[in-house]
Every structure is written in structure tokens, then in C-alpha cells.
Length: 217
Image: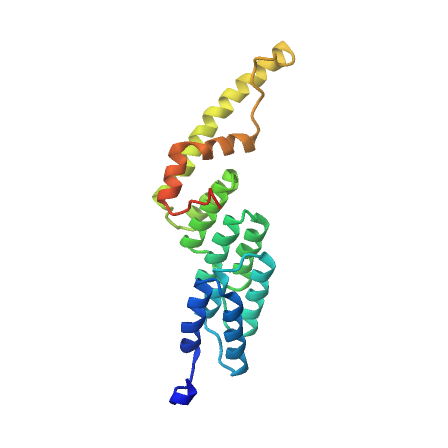
């Protein structure tokens, strides 16, 4: 590039790094990234996002997040939403909580989009009660819920109320007549009830339409 009197900048390097990352040529992308730093060219938010999209190990994600801050490139709300979505797909909810808390520590408030992504991620990881808690918190902050999100959680809430009524009757029956008979179904756990609800065709349809189909990942 310099032979043609073209001085490379962040845009130039990003144009090389992004397609390499997209094609999973991570080693080549890292070489160009290292060259970029040696030339004292500051990586942009696009540079880091290209790497975040292809990382597959949580330690690497947090290492890159630290490096991003060291380079003076502060994570944006889009960065954190990307990472919340990634860890939800990996079903690593402890890391989701770390990212959610890091947003506040870095002075980035939780907005409507981040709530929607978090709620969907928790919902699809069978953490429906926790998702509902954030749904209420979202509304208390004045954010309007996404219609599909509201439909999913309201359907779960209605189903839970019906199921809890049935479970209460079953519990009373077992207390009155002793231990349950062989043909009496055991009382389902909260996790089982939530998992069964998430398997309903209607629920899966709504989540797929919303662009949050994590089922096969």
C-alpha cells in the first residue's frame, strides 16, 4: 500500500480484518491486527466487533474486551448487546450477568434493546422467572416491551397461574391421602414447567419470528 503512496489507516486495516474474520481465518486476522498496533494505528470499534463475532471461548472474549479498553476504544451498547447474545447462545448465564453488570460499571445504561436481548436469552435458557423480573424492571424504567416479548411472557404467566392452581390441588390431595399412588403424576418442578412451556410449538414459533432461535446452538 505504501509503495503506491497509500498510507494505511484504521479503515484500510478493517477492510482486511473483517473478511478474514468472516472466513474464519483468525490467525491471519490477528497478524494484521498486530501489524496495525505496531504502526500505532488505533483499532476502531469495527475492528474489535469483527473479532468478537468469531471468538468461541469465553476467556478470549474477556481478554479482547480488556484489550479494547487498553487501546482507548470504549465498548458501546452494541458491543455489550453482541456479547450478551453470544453468551446466551452458549448458555453461559454467569457470563451474561458479568456483561450486564459491566455495562453499568463502564457508564453505559441499559436501554430497551439490551433488555429485549437479555429477556429473550434468559427465556430461551429456561430462566423464565428471571426473564419476567427484567421485563417488569424494563417497564418500570419506562421502556416499552417488544410485542413478541410481551406475548411470550404473558403466555407463560397465564400458564403458570393455571399450573400453580393445579399443583396446589394435587398437593392438598397428597396430604389428605398420604403418599401419591403409582398412577399419580409427580408434582413438576419449576424448571420442568418452564422447560415444557418453552417446548410448546407456539412459543418456539414466536421466538423464531423474533430472531432469537437459540435452540440448535
